[in-house]
Amino acid sequence: MGAPPGYRPSAWVHLLHQLPRADFQLRPVPSVFAPQEQQYQQALLLVAALAGLGLGLSLIFIAVYLIRFCCCRPPEPPGSKIPSPGGGCVTWSCIVALLAGWCWRRWRGWARR
Figure 1: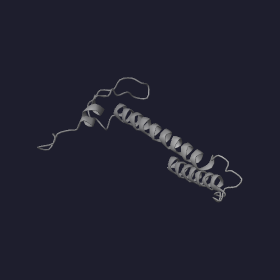
Figure 2: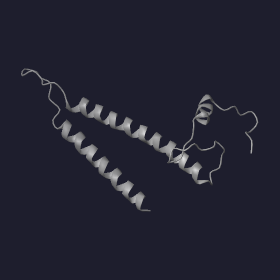
Figure 3: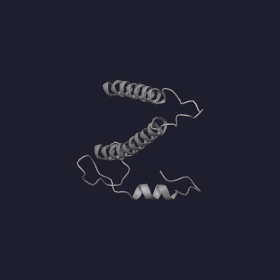
Figure 4: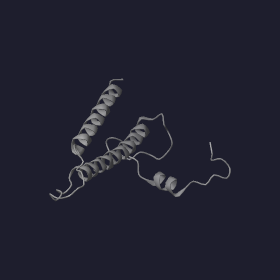
């Protein structure tokens, strides 16, 4: 099965196809497309897990930044007329806790299947 006429793969496609593939024991896997083989599936899962790890880390960094941005404000001078946002840190902490609980429950339900 070849590429359709006029199709030119992008630089990302070339880059990703040149990456070395490894299974769970970090043994090299041939770059032949064989989705039915266990080694190929393990190599694909390893790449997906690395991408998921990167996504998770970036979401954690964004959450920490937003919580710090919203909650850790310098104290206002005593004569200022700007009302302070009451409960900002508590609100964001509750939102993060609810999202974490929801994600954990969804993951546990998915893992049991």
